[in-house]
Image 1 (cartoon, rainbow, N blue to C red):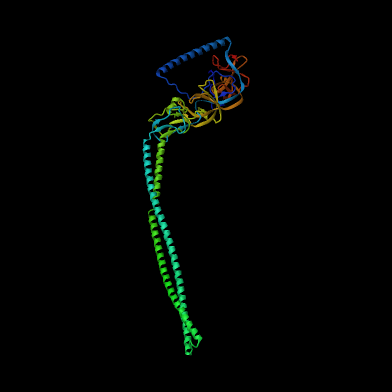
Image 2: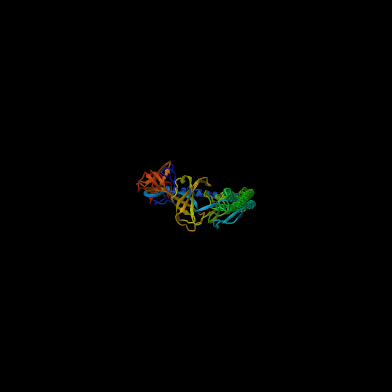
Length: 555
């Protein structure tokens, strides 16, 4: 019959295998739990390989001798009827936590990679690994000779464009001044036309008045002449009647009236002459006023010609073209300045400088976890925008980044609690919590596939250093009050899980069981045994346990 072997893998109710820890283990086994991790393979020289093979042969012979000795001792004990001494334990109800185990390293809690904005060769490196910098500090510079030449050329073009714009604006100012003067002259000319037209109007009014005076004078003259003629006719009739100045007072009155009328007639005729002279003067005034209008209109035409000439000297289109040239030149300068600035690598935030990791630095770590630091950047190194040169990390906050196997990562969720142990703090466990789970798979050097899971420390880790290695146990779920037995009491053969009970004759009785979740220390028993039964454990037994074997229980 094939000897039974204790079950050492983690198993979850017939589904995926799990690794976890017990909240209240029944009894800690002396067996080392199996861990699914990616460990760095050990590399040796040829001499070391030979030594290692020699040591391995010696170990094999020692194991063979020990097994034979144990067999002899077990056989002796069986012949003596004492039975094989085996450790035992009771099946107990406990709470167990289902966990996932992974290895990892301390990483900065917040960090920011620094990428070059352009490709080129490193001209200078201004910082060293671990330097503290502030935002905007220069970390490195790239060869920027070509960019500086381009900037100088763009600046010369901008100066030329601005000079052309200045000349066009000066010509425009002169044209504007000429136009202003021409507009002022036209305004004056228009005022002269208005005044001349007013003079014509006044001259026409004066002539109308003079003509009215002449007409009135002529009318007075004609009236006096008619009246004198009438009076003279009366005097002639009176003379024909024999009347004269000596015998008729009326005749004398008429003669005196004629004299008076003739005197008025002389005055009227003088008024007519004067009125005619006024009309002539008024006509002359009208002609003069009209000449003034013509002269004023000629001034307006001259002013219009000056305005047209000023408009011809305007350079608005030239100014628009010059301004467009200046804008284009400014854009060229800005582009060149951007190129020059791109050759200067600056810190995007305050923090500690680390050189960006590379594939070589990842291989040096011997793990799929992205390394925090890489090889030092050297002068003359070729860089491209797609590869970071530095990483700026916040020295005040730290995380633990674990590499979780692809089989287990689907069960990890943000907010799950975890325990972290660091190699630098042997025997101490730090509380942590899952912060984020990477979506990007990473290969390990052993051919596995892992995903990075970032854990945030729930407590302060004294004197922690970036890159410190350690392990984490992430708690997936907790099952309360389930029947458990020590992991060393769980056996499996040909797909059947079973335990060894001890009957009244101190003989082992192979008893099939159905198991569920398991931890590093215990395994859940769903059915097959009850609480309080005593089971035998493989740990410490000198020979493999078998059904019907006589044993001596050791509590």
